[in-house]
Length: 491
Image 1 (cartoon, rainbow, N blue to C red):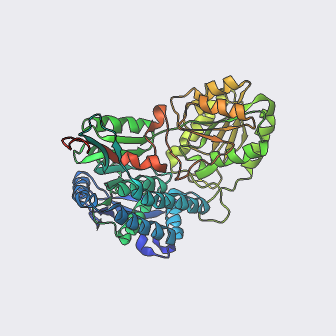
Image 2 (image 1 turned 135 degrees about the vertical axis):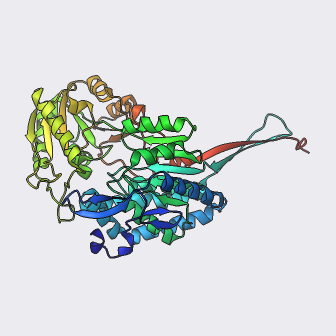
């Protein structure tokens, strides 16, 4: 069991957190959790369904009625303590991430830095929620706009970043004065439970932060999106599931923020710094074994440097070390499950059948299980599945383009619009291209764009709303307008 490698074994919780209590059993039985690198059983967790989810929602509503009236300073102090505990227990939290999700331990440590940064940032933002006094049309009136917490929130989070995808939702909700019910992915709930344990230690009141366990996601998600007491739904995951949650939330007209699928292009112009482009593309493609919503899904290279860049990327890809994320020096861990591996295989087979060539990797790794070789596929065309769909794995397809207009048209030829990247040393070209790209985020001469201080989110079918930055807390606030008349004319 995973707790044996932790310094603080109290962070290993095989239970749901509801109203400040750890629920170890339900009438619905349990489900197993496995390590994707070894296939070993990590835990058996209680399956929550309607009764447990309803209890969590009602507990959150009761807790909200008190939490919303605490001062911003008080909330900020508690959230700061939560942040400090996350920093103190960073190594244990990183090990939990690697055990259940598979990413290399060095990356898991990086995720914990990223995750805790949202807690620190939004704890401070709690003190900066301000309304407005608006000039009134009559001398006897005052007009005031207040910002108030939206109410009980529901967060449904993915498996690929099991800490960061929780903190960048929970931290702004708590800072705004909301309570929240979190349904983490059934593949990676242990990180969420550990964060809940630390939140309790920090002094976050019972019921303000609840974590539901279980693999009956349709039942839990359906209740979170339909329950009258839930006023806000936030989700990170596929566009397909996001559409379902939006439809379900429409019946009770909930506030929604959605961070959905991506098909991120990297455009490398012929005037790019090739060394910089290689480093950025490797980071944007292979972070978390390519299992990231902002991972480079298509690399579009101008004809003049195509052959040079292809060779450099293939050489670097072949040098990557694959293995169990707990082993030293590992850069590529396992994929999350067999279905993910099968999808990668299908995308490669479709491309090769249509004329593409595998320059590096291309098959399951000798380690077996869910391991797959980091792969470079060249001579890809835009009609191939690998260029149209989000692969979500360690596969880098390279496409050739000739003109700036062609690159922009190729990049925008998708229903998605989350992240994009470009490499050029020409300021005018950078500006024109950045404005023309139909994406919520553009990385310019960098493959690393995620930070708590910037607004993360997409356009088109990649989502609604923003997370992080000063804009992130607005997703958990409502604006109330007060029109106060009868004050008399000014003296």
